[in-house]
Structures are given as structure tokens and as C-alpha cells.
Image (cartoon, rainbow, N blue to C red; front, side):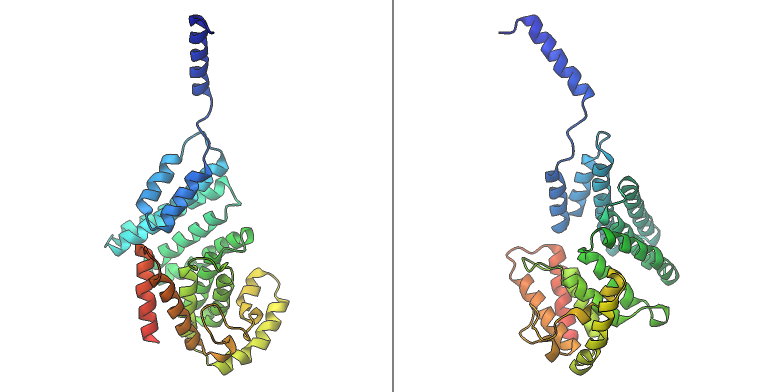
Length: 305
């Protein structure tokens, strides 16, 4: 049994250790909770959580993990503020803050794929809000960040989808290509593991780009041979993705259709894809605001075909 003096010494030692030892390290469960909040469209709660977890005892990698998530939540909160009537100057300032958070995350951990992705996302939104000239002017930096993201994580379907959006939206005279966008969409879509709800952004953009390309089945099949050759001789993953359609087996039916790809036009494939996405969402027992907005958008797109 400890006497009174021993107890006092033990308590003093414990108190001293509490003062000199760092706070509890960042737990993966905390990051998982933040990611769940993001997935469920609870951006304000997510931002509060990651801000509360930041403290001086964390190492650089841990701080980076929190900072890119702050950039992520900042982007989504800015999108919300913009939709609710925030001024252009206020919106631009918020996107800039998101870029700065991601840049700080990169400075602490240059191998953080998501930090590059969210800097690109905030930059792209900043450019489109600022105006067409600034939007086009930001493309080089955006693509550099997306390439950096994908060099670290080639399975990041969101990054492939954003590259597809860039290709689809940039005029052909400036290097854009709706055809290459469809291939990049297929690359991103190919990364879904078949479980749960597919990436709604990736599959939704693929439907949009198929509608825009609007090839009939004959043209689709005719172009495959050349794409297959270009895919095979591509010098890197980015060039491969631009011809990824040439690596897709058109003699098989995709997960979202009973027809083979070779039997469908672009719009027929897009229609089956949208119907599949709509069914997936309508079968959910609990649908969040983001999923509901996507469901409404998919229905509108299907009706417009």
C-alpha cells in the first residue's frame, strides 16, 4: 500500500506527464467520421469537426489530413453559399480560402492526392465564377494538380471525371474533345467495385457527355479500332485515359444495360445509364439532399434525350 507521501508524488508525476506529453494523436475514427459527414452532405458539421481536431501536437501528415478535408468542406460550403445568393466577391474569397487550405496541406505532405484534387476543385470553381478568361487561364494549374493527384492515386475516379469535364467544356480549338472526355469518363467509371451506390458525379457526367457526343452505334464501333491502337501505344496513364474507350469490350453489356455496348448509340447508352442511376437512388431507404438533387437532375436529363 502507498503511504500519503507516495500518493502525492505519484499524482504530481502524472500531472507533470500530462503537461509535457503531446495530446492524443489523430485517430482514424475521427477522419472516418469526417468522411461520413461529407458523404452525407453535412458540411457544416464536418468543418466544425476537422477544425476542432487541429492542434499543435499533430505531426505534419496528420495536419495535412485535416487541412485537405477543411478545403473539401470549404468548397462545398462555398457552393451552398453561392446557390443561396452570396455575392461574387464573397464567393471568390471563399474559394481562395479553400485553395489556400489545400496548398498548406500539400506543403506539409506532398504525397496527399486529395490535397491536390481539392486545390484543383477550388481553383476551377474560382475560375468559372470569376469569368471565362480566368476560367480558361486556370486550366493549366488545374490539370497540373489533377495529374499530381492521379500520379499518387491512379484510382481516383473523381479526378478522372474532372479531367473529362475539362475536355468536354474547353472548345476544340483550345484542345478540348468531347470524344476524349467520354473515354476519361469510362476510365473513372471502370474504377467502381460494383458495391453500393456508384459515384454519382462520375456516372452522371458520363451520361451527359454521351448525350453531347451523340454518336450512332455504327460510328461508335467504327472508331474503336483506332482507339485501341492509340490506347496500346500511349506513353502514360493520362494519354491512355484519353483513348480508354478502345480498351472497353463493346461485345459485353455494361452493368446498367441488358444490351451490348456495340448495339447502342450514345444516347441509348446514356438513357439506360440514367434509368439505372434513378433506380439505384429510388431504392434507397434514406436519401440525403445531395442524392435527391442528383436524382432530380438525372430525371431531367433522361426526359431531355
